[in-house]
Image (tube, rainbow, N blue to C red; front, side, top):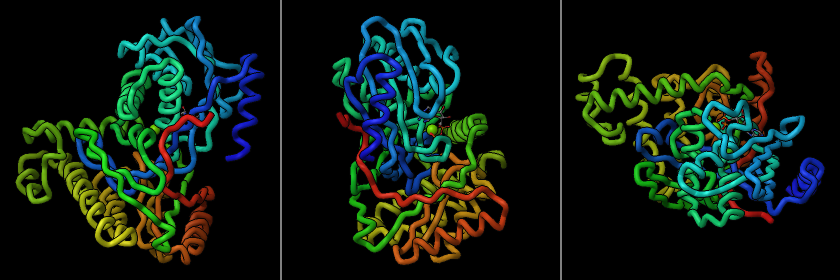
Length: 384
Ligand code: ADP
Ligand code: MG
C-alpha cells in the first residue's frame, strides 16, 4: 500500500511527460451472498476488499485520451474522445474508454485525459477488477471535470459503460459495491431501487476470518454463458408475467415451475432461493452475528453448482475442502466459471482451512490457489 503511490506516479511522468493531477482508488469486492440476483432486480450483500484499482489521471483539453496500465507492457493507447464507439476499442482499453464514452453520451461534455491504471485486484478472478477499473476512472472524471455526480450515479455510468461499450451485460452489484461500500460493513443493496443499508461486519471481533481462495481459473470465455443465463432469467420472468424474478417468493415456486419449460426451472429455483438467502443472511447478521452466515454460504454454493451451473471442478473442490477442513461455510463468489471461493472460518482454523485447500489443489494437479484474508474495506475515493 505504501509503495504503490511512488512507482506508478513516476511511470506516469515517464509515459506522459508530466505529473498526474490526482489518484483515485476504487476497490474490488467479494459478494457474501446474492449471486446472479442483481440482474433479476434482487438483493445482494457484498463487501469491498482492500485490493483496489488506482487511476493516476491528468485532464487534457485537446480531446485526446491516453490509456496505460502497469499490468500491460508497452506504450499508451491513444484515442480521440469524439471518435469513441462501441466495438471500436480492442482489449483492456475498452473498459476505461467505455466510461468516457458513457459520460459523453449521458450529456456530460467531458474531454480527454492521460490515465495510468495500477491495480492489485487480480483480473478475471471473480473479484470484480473490471468494475473497480471503471469506477476509478469515473471517480477521476467526476472530480477533474467537476461533474458533481453522486456515487450511485457514477456506479450506473460505470455499469452502462460495461454493458453498452464493452458488451458485458452485467448487473449493478459490482459497480455499486466498488463505489459505495464502507469499511467495517457489508452493503445490503436492493438492486431494483438501489436503496442501500450498511450492516456492520466485525469479523475479527467475532473471532472470524473470511478467506478468499482464488482458484486462478479465469473466466475469459464466460461472457456468452453469462449473457445466456441472463436471457434465460428474462425469458422466465416474461413467461410468468413478471417484470423480474425478484417478484417471485419461494412459496410461489411450485406453481411457477408448472408454467415453465424444464430448462428454465433450475435457473428460476436458483434466483428465487438465492434472493431469499440474502434476506435471511441480513436477518442472521443482525440478530445472531456473522458466524450464522456459514450454512447460508454453503447452501448458496450448492445452488450455483446444481441449479445455476456456474461452478466448476476447481471452485467445487475449494468450497468442499474448506468446509471439510472446518470452515463454517464456503461458496464461489462472483459471476462464476472459475474465479474465487470465499470461506468463512473461525480465525483459529483459518490457516488449516487454507492449507487444506492448497493441498487438495496440489493433489488434483490444479494450479496453486492464491489465498487472501478479506476485511470489509472502503469504497471509491480520491487518494491524492
Ligand atoms: P473481473 O471483473 O471478475 O476481474 P472481468 O472479466 O469482468 O473479470 O474483467 C477483467 C478484465 O478487466 C481484464 O481482462 C482486463 O481487460 C480488464 N482489467 C482489469 N484490471 C486491469 C488492469 N489493472 N489493467 C488493465 N486492464 C484491466
Ligand atoms: Mg467484471
